[in-house]
Image (cartoon, rainbow, N blue to C red; front, side, top):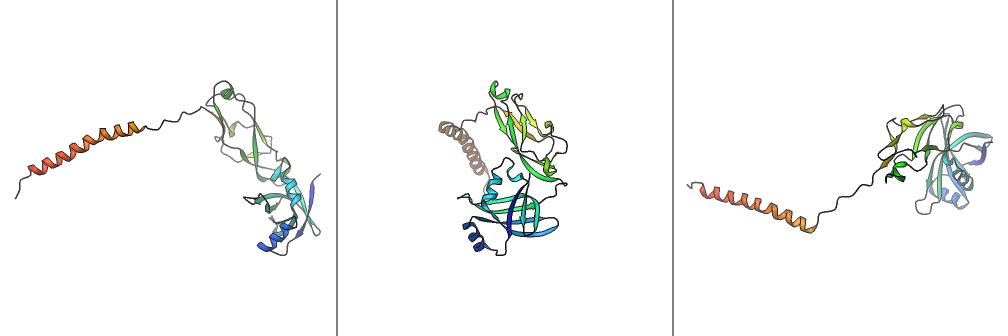
Length: 223
C-alpha cells in the first residue's frame, strides 16, 4: 500500500514565512513535475522524517495529497541545517509509475575478503552509491556485493555486477567499486642531518663555479 501524506498549497513565500512554518512543526516544500509548473507546498515535518528513516529513504515512493489532487512523488532533495540538523526544505518530484527514473542506490558489502583476512590488505570502498535507471517499483533498497573471494590487489568492478532485468547501471563498466589494497608504507621524511649533508654536497659545486667565473674575468685582457 502506497503511503499518502497530506499537504497544503503554500501562498506565503520567503525566509520569514518559512521560519514561521518550521516553528509550527511544518516544512516548506516544492513539487516539480514534467506536466506541471513548480508548486510550493507545506508538509508536516514528522511525515518527511519518517520517510527518510525508512530503508528506502529518499527513494521511497509515496503520494502527496493537496486540494483534490493526489500525485505519486519521490524526494528529489532535502536541505538540512549544517549545525542543528534541522530539516529546512524539501524538493519533491512527480513520477509516473510506468516511466523509468534515475536514482542513486547505496552499495552494501557482504563478506570478509581473503585479501584482508589472510593476506593483510585493506578494503578500499570507492563507490558507496551507484546511479541506476529503472521503473519506480523496481528500485532496490541497496545493491549488495559479495567481496569474500577478493584477493590482494583484486577489485570488484561495475562490469561484475549481476543486476535484475530492467535495472540499468549508469556507470562505466570498468569503474571499480571496491579494491583490496596493500598497506602502503609512507616514506620517512628526511632527517635534519640528511638535509644538512645535502646542502654540504651542493656547496662545493657552487663555490667551484663562482671561482671559475672570477678566474675567467681576471684572464680577460683589459683595455
